Length: 252
Image (cartoon, rainbow, N blue to C red; front, side, top):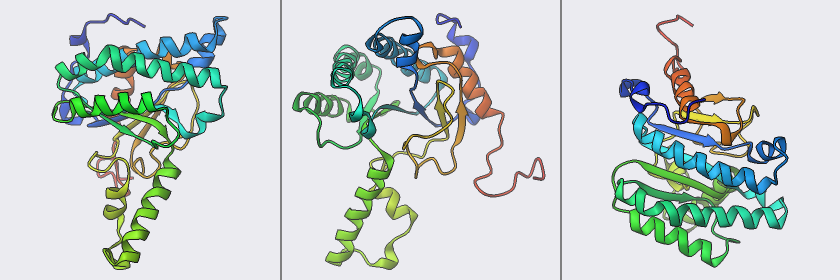
């Protein structure tokens, strides 16, 4: 696929574009193994893909982009690989933060803070603080994130409010739950993309993706380029979203 394709080739009406795209970036390790390289080489190449897809999102008019970069289950990986992932996160933020800020990108982080190294927390806090007033594209990094844990934490916060009398059980509805999640204030994803050919969510945005469209692509994350991204968006654009109702144009 052509990673230097002319952006104008991909211009399209934004009226039926997804407002929010969420991506499960899968396949870095397999990409490296297929080439006889250490897994760290796949992760490093994956960071370059992140950079390309963030820029492509702006070209495509995507308002919100959420990237699943480190799950709460990833702690079971070898310590050396976890250290490499943390180092790459620091490299990405340090190298790209100024450009994101200049481009009016607001950075948000979702996920658990507990267990993260102090230097990682400080770097993430700095990036979020610096871009807090930007009102262009929003880049959401899901780091040390797991959706079941997110929902459980939200339930605990709601339970405390009910116990204190701040809330009544009858006040509890889907909107209230949504407002207690890490993604409060962020619209639900219209499109969820997963690379590498795997067909599962892996504990990613389980609540938020209830009515999302899903596109699973076979290419590994380091090979996912602007052209592949555009093809996934076109797949979304060619679908009819029902939100549990009827598609009047098909009669289904």
